[in-house]
Length: 243
Length: 295
Figure 1 (cartoon, rainbow over the protein chains, first blue to last red):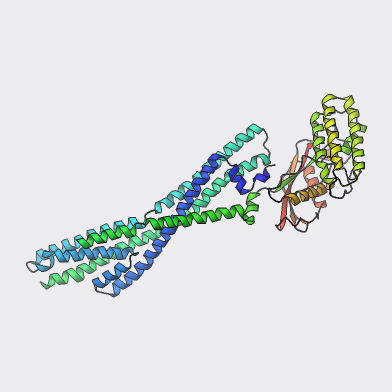
Figure 2 (figure 1 turned 180 degrees about the horizontal axis):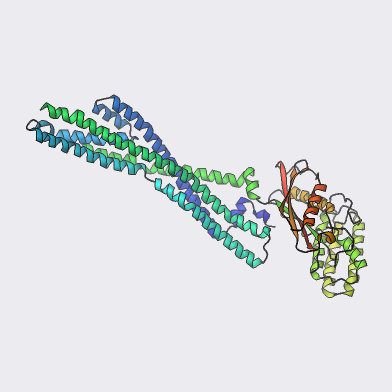
């Protein structure tokens, strides 16, 4: 009987070429998706930890250059990186910003216009930085969605193909007892099992990561608003008001 | 300006995933997969349930070459030769087909496993049966059957010389001499690869035991051919049957019940050999009337 072939290793080696190919593809998918899960998990955990640390520091210290030094330390935090971009922009503005600080005494309108121009610059820089950060954070994550969506179908394809072949074989043999039908079908079903095994972690991870990424995004936007507020209120205006 | 460029460059470098990390993580992932899949292949815990999704099956088929249902007789599977003898004496010229002779051939070829009795007696009885067959064959179609019987005889002779340790011959219902497990059906279901020797012998033992206890009357149950009931039994290591269920009912209640009762009567079975390391053993039994009915 066929039961000596029911060992898993025999089952796979006896399966058709197409089923084997499907299994190979599924294994590759699974390997990549797990690698991405590992990478992203590490990345996002680090980002959360360091961002928390950085925000604490940011709100405690009122000296931007200190915060900047801290932000350089915390490379993993997207908020810190955003702050750095904003700070560099601000610094550049104040260095080259001739109309903003040095000649702000001439007229009120000029100073207001310059002020707005200054915050606009920073705003643009921040927006760009946020976009970059978001794309960095969500990098590779779509692959998880692809894995989650397609591997069950790939597995199913392998199964259908295997069953097609086994039924063809049955047709040739002319007998259809359970003992004849079952091994072929169980061989073919390995492909579906593999597809599901690849898809389930990928879908779970995808949902987890998208939720985390959304959180990071929100944090980035709220931080950039806070930063702009502070810049406008505490840095640009006092200087403008001094005249 | 310079600083800004530095920062941008820094960002791109640091925050895109560095190839080293990528390779490393893929390597880790690959390794984990390899270990997991390897474990599935080689660990016995994974191997057995995965590798053997169907309990191995034993055919308990009724094999006979009597033309019709012997009147008032409780025919027991596996006593084909004895039955044949009776049929030969009682009936007048039943048509014997080649397939049937083939079946006997098979049946006898399997018998050496379990011939417990002295070989002289066995071969004598079988020879007697064969003589009866020959007598009938003379009356009915001859050439092909004669050839088959020649083969049969050869096999009987050769198998008669092999003496194997088997199950002590119990009382067989029809009163045929013990130790002629004549029709051993179409053979046992395959064992899994590996160390199967002990379990195969064990399966044969179970098979024999249950066959002895199986009483099926065609008159009561009908002689519809191609009926098949599949029972699965779960044998604990001590040999007691802890569970019996139908994998497939034949549709004939009498056959189903007789099969069920045969298994119940056989409880407890001999203990599972120690080579088999799982706490219980599941085996499927196929009860067939296949060879019984003349078409």
